[in-house]
Image (cartoon, helix red, strand yellow):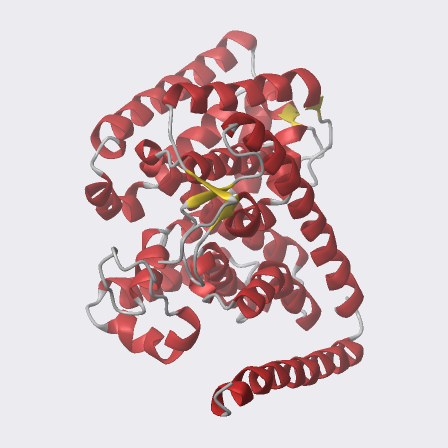
Length: 426
């Protein structure tokens, strides 16, 4: 393995420091960025705000902070929680995409390309420039796959989506597809092996066991193979639940409090049972149950977060802001906050600016990291709006062909510049 060099430092974990930093961020966020939202629902015309955009962005933000701190501090004891957070991200992929396509009915080529650009532009750029495999950044292929599956489910025979029976059939087919691919022995390799050149990954660390190239893709995609469908189901019933909540808020005070109290108690009991019997399992055992149980804590969180109108009205905009750049912070952590020693290597060291001062170093690298990733977020969206017009398919086709030709030329030129000296023995 290549030496980490003089600008890296080793990872260390202290539960006390980890929790201190996280709760300090929550306190600062609550004191400086708590905002009240009063937007009216397009469904009920009232400010119910059940699972509103501010809330889901906040949700992504506080999870992403823990996800990143887990990597930075090597907080292995919260591994199961991180698995849950990734499941929640995939749940939101199903929920958000279903909501968009079901309501707006926009299955245009431009929308599809914009979606793929947002998910893959930065990661493909990193793969080419840094000679890394796509699967090193496994979140990107996972979200791309499940986004495509939602798009396909709603896009096929989309003129019948208003019929509840058709949606039920489509969701049933989604479950069937997942069962066939991930549950039937041999089917996963049969279906995905032609794409090994894209989805294959081998950890270069010689101390790690050697697995087949598709092992990582099988493991990562399999953990959350069902939860995106649960997100679709929740999105479909979102208007119904919002109307229930409207009726609940109009009830007499004591009855309303009784119903909400029952919901809270039920959530606490279910959450406790899940924690005791599932979450506390050893990580390898937990992973076996995760695909079938991850919907439980997600549902508990949604119920508790939306149980009162005040809870729904307020959000912490600092976390919501961080929630908008989760893709860039995920990719950027590999190269700005953390460091690897070789192409395709997992980040095992910290980027160190001032050796011997871990907290000062944490502060400086974090400031640079957030600044750069936010800039990457802005550039990705700016380039997307520049190269992918929303209502001009002819121009979109022209831009696509030009980009493909330029990419092939640049890649071919780079390949020649690398290959010719080797052939000449230089």
